[in-house]
Length: 115
Image 1 (cartoon, rainbow, N blue to C red):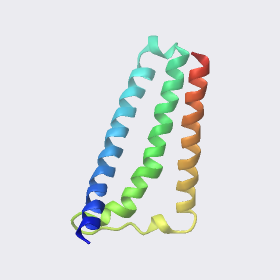
Image 2 (tube, helix red, strand yellow):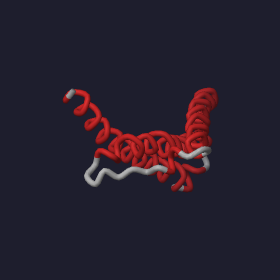
Image 3 (cartoon, helix red, strand yellow):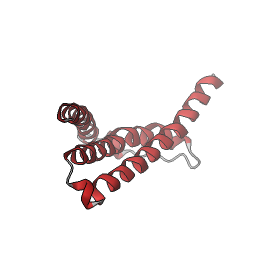
Image 4 (cartoon, rainbow, N blue to C red):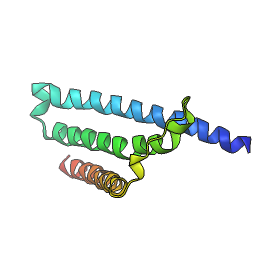
């Protein structure tokens, strides 16, 4: 019993850390690839910038949403967000998540072909 509770608590903290670290890393790489004028001229920078944006959308629409549903109630105050489970909202987040996962994969394929 306590092992399952510990697993959920660790996953709650780990999901939030993965999401925050991923958003920070993708924002940093987007800043590097799209920020410098010299880098913007390279086609590979365009692909890598698009991958960063796509991965940020996946982190926000899948990992953060999952944390809000499962991890947030475990934090002090036992908050819960009920609008996530309403009709249409869950489906649109799921559609967005799957779409941008496939976009990331195909951007990597295109980047590999172009190189």
